Structure formats: structure tokens, C-alpha cells
Image (cartoon, rainbow over all chains, first blue to last red; front, top):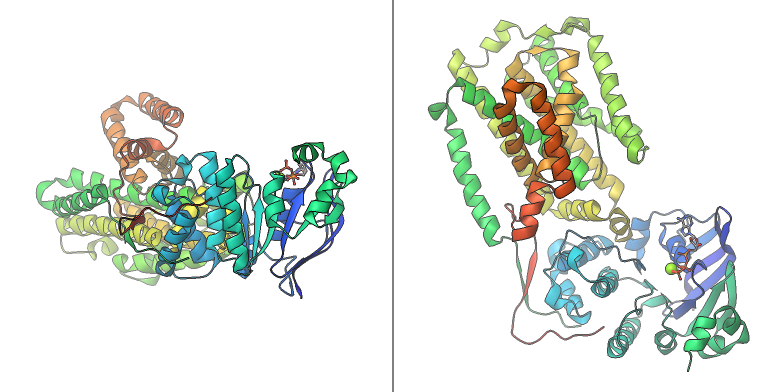
Length: 243
Length: 345
Ligand SMILES: Nc1ncnc2c1ncn2[C@@H]1O[C@H](COP(=O)(O)OP(=O)(O)OP(=O)(O)O)[C@@H](O)[C@H]1O
Ligand SMILES: [Mg+2]
């Protein structure tokens, strides 16, 4: 199976802060990958490099067989890479529904009218239907995160990048999120999910990598990786959260 | 996912009321020559020009995030093109206006190529430098009076229409028509696909890019359109003044400072803002015209008060409180069929 996304020898530093050193990654088509790592490890920066909002110092990013290292974020989105931001970035003055219409119309290159029904349906699936006509700036943090996810899905991506979407959810909401993400996977979408809520990850991903000190220090089966002594050592918080 | 049955509504009750209000005001204003004196017409035409300039600047800065302090470049360009086309080429004065729009659009493309490389404050400074360059170039054109300026020859003025009164009417109507055209263009633009992109860019450029919007192209289109509109308004302003000089045509105070004041007071990034702002500005100006420095001080105090108390401007305050919009821009979704929407996540 040809990979949908490959990172080759990606390096990035912010001044003295090294966030990536020669990172290699191949994501299979339809695969769901989880990323964990301590705060400031560079997880979000990696999403920036994949989506084009952060330029790597060195290395190559390929998506669906083409080199996208130099493409703008808008081009990458239209190729099929969607991202939910860790710090929600809603279009604050537009309604929740309009936020999705923008993503669907531009991210997926469709006519405005053609996307209305899909967007309305997505809002229902993401639990935002009753707030569809609310201005996005008036949403709570939790609803803003839901909006991030809904808006990313509205672009009908091939690759979905999720950055900490489960934080703050109560148990049954988290279960619904996991179910939703499984539904999305079932349609063939590849997923990379950065998450501190480990049990949600374990329930959803095929593979787990641990980012620390500019590289992946562990990778493989999620349940095995999470129990490895290395991970427990550098990532006590997660180890403690494990039952 | 099965798509739900929905209906999309654009107009709200306030926007329907707004349209009726606009229609009534428009009829009254078209009829102004029959109810107003010469002074009224002049004042109204001036107000139209400022509403138009502010609406264009609002589109540029408020929506596209291109905070220009150099739009006087295009006011002056339009003014000088009017004089040049009328005096040197012999184009009838009124016919110069559409030509000026096209020429200004063409001029703005290389200018954009230059200043779009600049970010943030540097962009603003860049726009001002461009305006200064334009002003210096204009002062070198000796056939148009060089640094001291020139008056529009009487023959050209007389050819606009029969008789002084009719001339004033024609120019008044033209000013009104240009304003309506510019407002219509802005409304149409904001309701179109471009409007979605522009509003998204206004709210969050990073998210706009990440959702597939070609921000650079949208900004370029807006820059070129506003340049064209601004130049046409500039031409019309100086068709009324009948005299041009580099300092008046490229005045940063008149064509940028006041325009920004109007937009910010009224509400930046909102269509209604410039209209409200212009009304406030002209009321203040007419009330305080005789007081000189007090007038400027009051403007300053009003600007600071609004920025502190209502950073969204007067219209932002009203719209936020009552949920009003005069123009039907929003897309509201109505779920048909009573069943509860299925929830997840
Ligand atoms: N634009 C930037 N300029 C300078 N430093 C940056 C920038 N973006 C990120 N950093 C730094 O790079 C490091 C990695 O940041 P990043 O947000 O990628 O971490 P993260 O793994 O997502 O952390 P968290 O779990 O807290 O979300 C941090 O030390 C951060 O301060
Ligand atoms: Mg992060």
C-alpha cells in the first residue's frame, strides 16, 4: 500500500529550541496514527509542517505521491489535507454554519449552494446543529473545538489532522467523538491524531508514535508503545493516567 | 450521513427593514435637487464621496486586512487623470470616469506586486510611500500646473451640461450614482463566493489559508477593485472642486485620516460602518465648523472614546446588542422537520 503521506528527514528549530531532527514518517493510506509527547515536544509544529503553515529547515513532505514541501497551505488543503487547530481558530464573526460553508466551498472547491446540505448534516453529526446560526465567536471553548473538527471534515479531506480534540470532554462525549472518528475512518480517510487523552487514542488508532527531543523515541502498536518503559519515563503524566 | 432537509435564509427582519429604509432614503436623495439648495447638494455630494471612500477602505482594511494609509494615491491619480484626459486628450469630463476606473485598476497591479511583499506595519508605510511618490510625480507634470496646480478650463466645465444649475444637478446625481454603484458592488462582492472568502480572511487569515482560500489572490482582487473605485470617486470630487494641486489631490488628511476616522467610528469590517461613521463625522463637522481647533480636538476625543468603549465601532455596538444587519449578508440554516438533530461528539 503506497503511503498517503511521507515525511523525509524533516528538521526544524526555533532558535535554540530543536523541535524536529531528521524525522521520517510514512502514513499508510487509510491508516490512523496517534502522536503523543510531552508539552513543547513539537507535535503541533509537525502539523504546521504538514499543512504548510510552518516551513521546515530541511526535509521533504510528500502527499499522495507528489512533493508538497513548497506548496501553500491553501493548495495543500485543496489537495485533501485538513487540520483542526489545537487553539481553535474559528471565523469569529461568521456563524457556525458559515464556518463550515467556507471550508466546504474553498477546501473542497465546490459551489456554495452545493455544500449547504452537507454542512448542515455535519453540524448535526458534530453536535452543533442547535448552534448553527450562532456567531462562532460566541461559542464556548468546547464548542469551538467541535467546530474545528466539523470544519476540517467539511473540506472532505483525504488526510485529517486532529490536534487535541478530546480534552475537556466528559466520558460519553468522548465515546461519541471516538465513534465519529471511527465513522470517518470507515470512509477511507487517513488520520493523524495528537492527543493527551490516551484512552481515546488507544481506542482509535492503528499505530502510536512518541515525539520527544526532536524525534520519535517509540513507535508501533499503541498498547505496547504506551507501556514501554521509555514512554513511562519521559511521559509520566500519561503513564499515570493508564489504568 | 444522510443530508438533512434544510432551508437557507439570507434576509433577516432587520435587513428587510434596512432594504426598505435604503429604498426610501434613495428616492429622497435622488429628489434632492427639488427640495435642497445648492449648499445642500454640495454637502450631500461630499458626504457621498466620503461614504464611498470609507466603504472602499473598509473593504480593503476591514475585510482583506490590507491596512493602507495611502489610498490618497488613487484619489489623486483619479483627480489627475480627470484633468489629463479632459484637458490633454479631450475626453468629455463625465466620460473620463469609467476610463479612470480602468486605468487605476491597471496601475494598481504593479503597485500591488511591489507593496504586497511588505507585511504588517511595513505594508502601511509602503502604501504611504507610494502615495508620496505619486504626489511627487504629479508635481512634475508641468502641463497640469506642476507643484502649484491648475484649474479645469471653463470650456470643459460648460460642456458637462446646459446651464449652471443643470451642471450641478448632473454632478450631484453622478456622485449619488457612483456611491450606489460602489455600495452595490461591495454588497454583491460580500454576498458572492468572494465575500465568504473575504469575511473569513477578515476573521482569521491563518484559518482561511488552512481551509483552502487563496488569500493572496483575494487580496489582490480587492486591492485592484478598491483602487479603481477610489480613483473614480477622486475624479468626481475634483470635478466639483474644479481645481487641482498635488497637495490637495494627494492629501493624506482628507483622503485617508478622515476616511479611517469615519470607518473606525462607524465600525470597521462591517458594511454599515462607513455610513454611520460618515453621518457622525459630518454632524460633528457641521456643528463645530466655526471652532477650529475645538473641532479637531472633538474628533480626536470621539475617536479615542469609540476605540476604547466600542472597538467594533458604533454599528458594531448596535449590531452586537440587537443582532441587526442592514444588508442581508448572513446565511442562516433552518432545519426542516421536527425531529431532534442526532447528536454526537
Ligand atoms: N512560531 C514559533 N516561534 C518560536 N517558537 C515556537 C514557535 N512555535 C512553536 N515554538 C516552540 O516550539 C516548541 C514546540 O511547540 P509545539 O507547539 O509544536 O509543541 P507541542 O508538542 O504541540 O506542545 P503541546 O503539547 O503543549 O501542544 C515549543 O517550545 C514552542 O515554544
Ligand atoms: Mg500542541
